[in-house]
Image 1 (tube, rainbow, N blue to C red):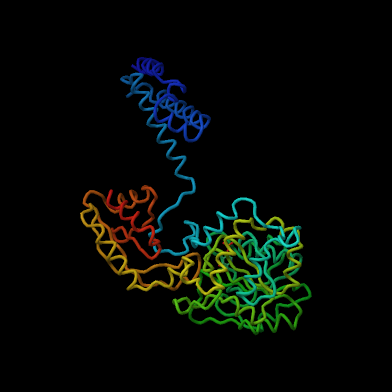
Image 2: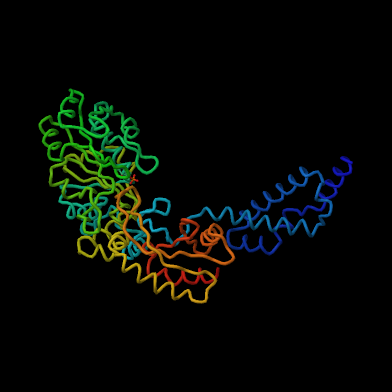
Length: 469
Ligand SMILES: *Cc1c(COP(=O)(O)O)cnc(C)c1O
């Protein structure tokens, strides 16, 4: 019996198409035309190998009936599946209907129209380190830096890859081999893999923890000083809040202490805001100009959180210190490219002009009121008349995200979808696999869409996707 099966497996293996035969199928020809014959051949070889393996392993059990034509069809289907799987992991535009404004998995802040135009215009040759007036080498990033100084009141600024890079750079330049004093309440992990103690040890600095998780007094900092102390570090806990019985010295107290002991005060503001966002409900996020005015020596913040631009780490502070960082060899490894400068310049120009709230998507989303979103949801729902999905408008909450303002959840109006033929999970899956993919969330058996994070220009596209379900 066993032998017969093995024999039939061998027989069926003879029907297996060759790689060349598979490459002559319409699907493979289409893939080769778009991505090159090498890529198509690689997939085809993998598919045929796997199919051969499967036929051998099944020992002829269910495969006896496979003709050459059937195996070719199977191979072609697998080819398509393999190709789709491989392509799904590429970067593609998605519609973010989650209501999470700074969505780290979806690229944090979406860029303004002006930032997008700036990328296109800087995409070719651009004046990254070229001075048009003198016709000689210019200073890298000088315009973006001057805009940052204008918006924060800082003496100088420097732009690097991200806020983690900025922290690593500062600690390496000023604290390697020495001690950094920090409150136990600020030894936090932010957004997955930024851990303050790890960045500190990477830089070669030694941590001097003071106080307790919930309370740290100025006297605790004072007691921790030694002749090894190089720096006082204040970290904004971002996605983490200690509430209730808690306290820490004011920024001015820390400034005075650092000055009297001749050490640097560095504040990692994380998200940081260029102006007070409390009118949008965001309180407790450091305003960079206020920290500068308080006399903090160095401050770092991210480019793609509340600022609303691209991934970048922005360092502001005293010019003598910033110039020292600029000269350090690690800066060369952490600097940004022309596209980042172009985006930051365009975003900062909106702030300078006073049009940031209208132009920068993250700020525009924050400024939307629940009645405004409810009205959009209402108009949107009417456009779905006659579609298979039915929609109900319910109350809900949006999320700032990106570790910013974790305890602020602005009220919103949600579109709750249901479909006669699809469970919530299947519906969410279908949306996620549409073109472009729509990212939604499921709550209590309903698929929820929050228009706060959907751009107005994406609405019609979203209507069409929903109608096709
Ligand atoms: C988000 C955050 C970081 C990391 O910023 P990236 O730009 O993602 O590197 C560092 N410190 C604080 C306080 C943060 O909130």
